[in-house]
Amino acid sequence: MQESLTIGQLAARSGVAPSALRYYERLGLIHAERTGGNQRRYARIELRRVAFIRIAQQVGVSLDEIREALDSLPDGRTPSAEDWARISAAWRNRLDDKIRLISKLRDDLTGCIGCGCLSLQRCALNNPADKLAGEGPGARLLLPRS
Image (cartoon, rainbow, N blue to C red):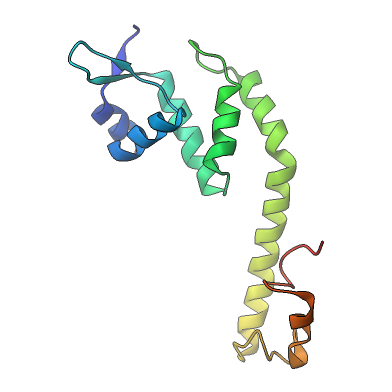
């Protein structure tokens, strides 16, 4: 095995708690070899996988989707720029939609709080007489309508 990291070293380098690393391993997101004493040893390439998991989670990608993307990466070598570009292309539309939704939330929420009424149910500007209740549950002005 190439130079490897203990779980403590991987945790320190990645900023992820050892318990989370064990959880990621149980889910098959990262992989460890075992020593004769049954201690985990992680290849250095796992640092990149953990960084990818962290950032993907922060933008709302589920662990199942992350696993699917990581399963498409090659075993035994550090993923190339082409490997990451393929994943990026597959997620681009979804991330663009999320960016639009977050921007709309930021802009609309600022405007709503700025009016001073703080009532999304009786707001005379955005929802007079609670007319949006007839359209169904949820944030009707923020979520895309189906």
